[in-house]
Image 1 (cartoon, rainbow, N blue to C red):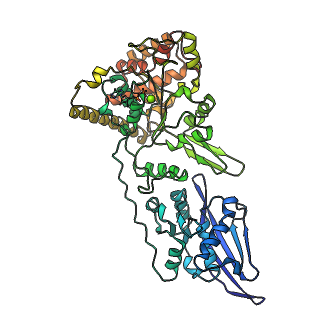
Image 2: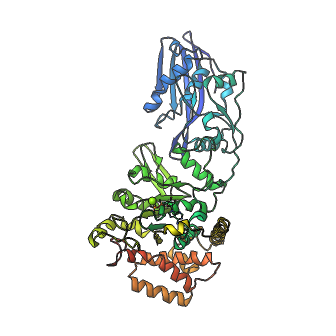
Image 3: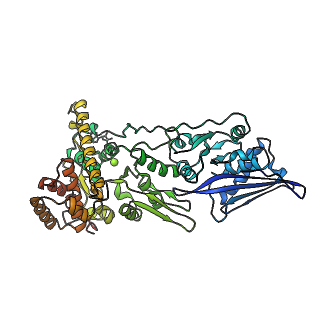
Length: 536
Ligand SMILES: Nc1ncnc2c1ncn2[C@@H]1O[C@H](COP(=O)(O)OP(=O)(O)O)[C@@H](O)[C@H]1O
Ligand SMILES: [Mg+2]
């Protein structure tokens, strides 16, 4: 922060410190970029556990500085990244290093950098390139008491959502120099305005027929229940899943920022919007790797399950996924977060998506299709279903069979678009009302979580006790279907949601019976018994 021209053995010594931040997961750690310059034999020393990308910073900054007429080889430069024992990665420190060098060689009044945090990658021609994780980075800066920031112009929209900071955006190193030397000031980033997005991926009002699948989407959205859709190819499973994000309650400011931070670290923020403004929908291909799905890496990155946090994780063609990859979803789905622990870095990413899976019911896809006959043998079907991870299947509260809609129904006039839209609007309203009821139970301290899918057994005893005939019906169903204790709890949670959609305080037998029907599929798919491994 200060240039101290000292006379040491006749040589000019300049010092400059610039504040920067290094990200690990969603956590940003303060870094002091300290540069000492001397006239003398050319040298460029970088100390402080810099990884390859940071060490290469030397090449980029030297080239970018040369374009401003600063020849680094006229100086002996020592660049120190403190704290020395923290491993620094990525190119996001480039701009801070370049600015600190400019301060140390007297091209910038170093004192004017006071209170600034600087983030940005440099290209060799001095262009400031966007970086990942700007929002969590600025949050770290705010917590460290810094009040001003310089970010790449490409990150400006996102930086607009940072709190309590005056943020400037820079497109080139030259612009930064002009800002501090009395030339053109950098433009300040206007505060971002949060408008929840109204553009749905797909609209439930456009789906013909499929009453029970639509109802399942409604229940899933209302109570955050995971859902599995089975049906022949072309029956509309993918289309149905894509309708789900629009049925979820819109993100509020806080959840939008939380979601944005995760997407930011993954480098997935739309530079024009700067924020994730609606529930995300992530549909990883079935060839996805374990780190791709759950996150990982020595510089921890969130996986699809975290990118889908506050939204929908869609596992289309579930049986095609590698079983070992799906098994890794178990812990995140149980805990609502992914913990990544590496020798160098630890990170935790939230991971509470609504999971929707879709699959054909058998290898040929026509099992239980009234219009085509299935060619698979019982053994082939068993093997095929055996590919699904049992524990994952067990976490699916709702099982829905999606029969093909006949072409006649698709082509017929059906309900008018206005009627279909009005019906969809009523459905969304029921979902929002059911959500409000669940939130109220949480704020009243009756339960811990704001969705029925996360109720514990003891909470269910408090708020999810069915009326006596509902209780009898449930016991009979459990007995007849040979359901596990876990399946029993899941049925109760779903029954609570169905009652909430109904505006009912008490869970009646109609609610229980609908909840039981939502669970029937694991029996129906395999007449010989429940799916392999589903009773855990
Ligand atoms: N019930 C339906 N209402 C309207 N369109 C449908 C319906 N079912 C299927 N379609 C149409 O058929 C296409 C294929 O459906 P898709 O969701 O890909 O089927 P699946 O995933 O079951 O193979 C959809 O994009 C949609 O255009
Ligand atoms: Mg599909």
